Image (cartoon, rainbow, N blue to C red; front, side, top):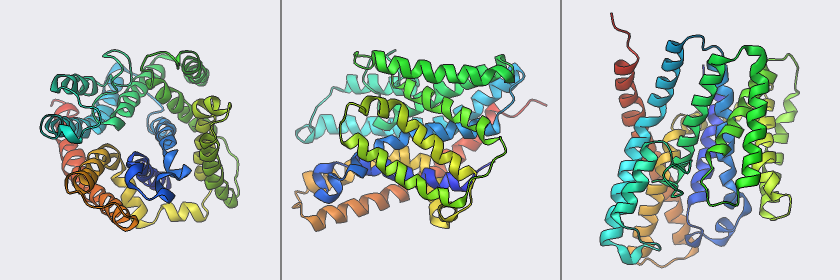
Length: 354
């Protein structure tokens, strides 16, 4: 079951991730240096919290090994086709650039190094230190690794533990993930999967709370943009509170925001259910994994290869066209990679023998 307004919010926040990854050096200052744009990385945490809630909503019972296997297969089918396609495409692009366009690369890498990063991504380990700390191929893909790890942890817990113990287990995971991020964060270890397990577990706990019967006035929706923007501003201040805020508080901001939306039906809810916003939500996964290669190729072609002068007008025009290209391309991959290949894999992996 889908919750339309949360899909809409996912779509808007996926665009914010695009803005975050867009090179600020080729944006007008009022955009490139804007704290809302520069701190939009926080919306990855929103995706994790939302995912924890939605998965709990749809998979509250996993009573047999077969059901657990089916759960893992479904999540793999949902995530992997586009991950494979976008990773291989990014590898080809980076290999070509590092061989033939090396003068336009800030930090050149060998094809061997790029291949190693690709393997790290395709093995879904690039949010862990198993293959090192390279982060994998295609920057945003680390979160897919973290997401899959969270799915596995969730499935095993729901299968093994009785319902009365599950909340305590997920509270423990939140605390443990936060502790390790605090204590090991300065080490040269890629522990970004902990971002996912913490946020995802909070989403699971949110599902438990939302099932309780209580009312929230519709005007509480106005709190959501206020606390989200205020949180981004606090990160921008670089205060001593930042480490706690980045690891813990920001997750509770999304915890509260999603909780409010689930209990209200005000102006923001209705806006998020509008047609174009729903369209963004539908293709949000494609937007998330596709955008980096599009905005890199297009902006690099215009300003680096073609030597177009950077003015406010040209920067804005390239930025707008880049976003449009991301949307068109993401619509294509949604239909042809996510949907068609996903359906093909379902027929292979999920069809029961007669």
